[in-house]
Length: 146
Image (cartoon, rainbow, N blue to C red):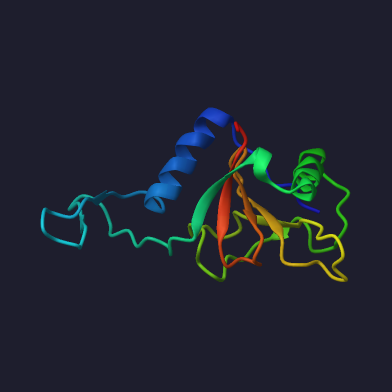
């Protein structure tokens, strides 16, 4: 099982902010006054924003089972399901597009007879963890500092 590499926190934060805000290199300029359409700077390629389904959640607000999953990820396993640690394909296109960058892990759902809908999806950057309770329809970036 491949354990995703985690980049140093300082370099990782810059990469994460760039990726989340811009979807990668490039820049978007705010819409001119009276216009609803943002413009793209001439020096950068156009950036198409993903659907607004990525929010933020405090670590302390996660369910206890998500804490357990994050602890398992930090420890390198063992994981309860064979699919845990595999590459997350991001077919929904909600997270910034980066092939092979994300990995998914099951968050146990008490009373469920299968894997349920809850997951942690990690990026390769340090502490870039996303929580979804609705099987990839929306994601919340985990804020580990609250």
